[in-house]
Image (cartoon, rainbow, N blue to C red):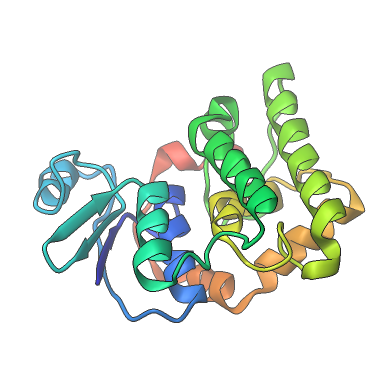
Amino acid sequence: MLLVMGNKNYSSWSLRPWLLLEHFGLAFNEVIIPLYQADSAEQIRRYSPAAKVPVLIDKDRHIWDSLAICEYVSEHYLSGRAWPADITARAHARSVSAEMHSGFATLRQLMPMNCRATGRHIVLSAALEQDIQRITAIWTDCRERYASQGPWLFGEFSIADCMFAPVVWRFATYSVSVTPICQTYMTTMQNSQCMQKWLSDAMQEKWLIAESKVGN
């Protein structure tokens, strides 16, 4: 498999399928295309007509969109193991993943992902606070329901954790105040071997995206 991604420091969408592949130890190669460059769209179109990352290429299959990639990997390589086994938990995990995938526009705009940033501060608007409160409510609900089954949102690691991984970096770099149960989850995510590997790679990148330095 080949995973075409944007800059690791900034590309929240790329982090999601990368984290799934890495966590489950699947073999894949990476292509990094720096975003917001004059030729970025042209380079990405070599892999996908949508001209957006990430893109997964597996033999003659080209899959774009982070959630679609995660679904494909779970079905084709993991026998569905990237979702909870229980049908109720699986429906719950799919619901919150879809909500993250399509929502939280204010958070995305005002708190762009920048993994290596520190000490960022912005004034929280009412809309941004609403996004934060909804996300922490999701995390709290999941952890209260499934804590006995493991440290991840649904006990065992799942696509839901991949979908919320960029939010963990956002909250951490902006020092968002969260409840102890949410902080424990964030610590689990940040300290995981895969997230640390992603951060290490991001720290070595030389590209800068001014639009993602909000609050620096």
